[in-house]
Length: 195
Length: 194
Image (cartoon, rainbow over all chains, first blue to last red; front, side, top):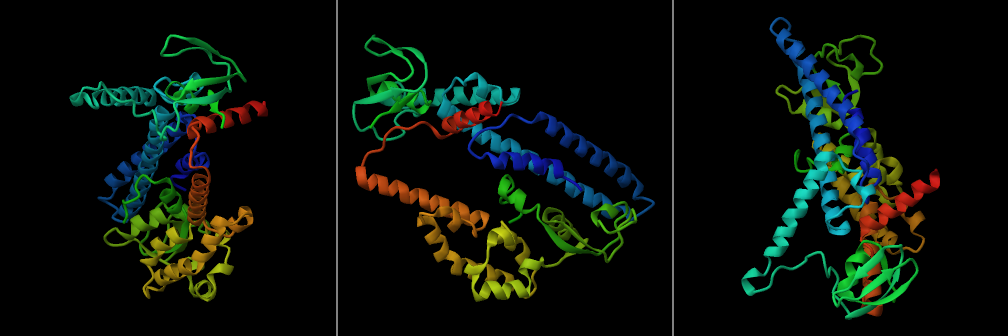
């Protein structure tokens, strides 16, 4: 049957709607091979339709299969692209190595470009009123207080605050920090707010 | 209609369901479409179950190559059950994508009854959907719902929870971003496997 490999590919994606999977280039190669084969068979039969009109219907069936494969592959890439966009907003502009490994090279290029586009846009915001840019990835929830108490979940290392103080973020240590300084770290899962 | 969901994975999975079709023309070398056929060629007049995407595209050719027939679950006997009391039916078992599939099937139904059955079914099941979204024992309440109904119920439950927590405390603690948290969880699960 046609286009079964590509369905397997999409089902894999569907199973993990919340995370990004390893880019499956092996399966994509197989799908492209299937398409090449279909295309070649169609070329042969299309040339033969001069003698045998009945072949025309077969060509149409294969053509539908080709279009189907194309649609599924595009959908796969498009869905991954949306996830990569989310990566930029949630992990920040520098991806951890284990996430980076999940992307194909072209996808990583796309990520870099998206990231720099976003940065350019954020810098340009409010320039006419004298500000130099707003970081849109901050304050996604309305800030409630200037300082919050946080628990460190991972061994992170040193963090330099805006006033010049350097604090050590060690696992299970508690800190009382300005909200603006730690909200990105909270979103990245390094700190946890204690309420 | 055809290309409105071109990139939607759900729509692709829906159109992968098989429906019975009657072939109107000979198809040389396409014998494998009908598992019971021994020949290499598919003869006109054969009945076979093919995926919707293929059926749709062959149906829209000029002249149409296939005639689409109604799948069993949209025929009279099932429609009677659904019209009598849709809440007793386990849509998850009957067809996970009952409504979406129905939309594709409906235009091939000459009498136009499938469409009204779909609306009727949703109307009857709406209360069930609502109670599933506020149920404390959500697993058994979710069980008979179709895939899209489950999404609706889950979204409703989430909204309900958010509203409740907002009303009670009025503050929203900062949390880890969704994808980061899920990535961690998965990594931990993989680590434990080895």
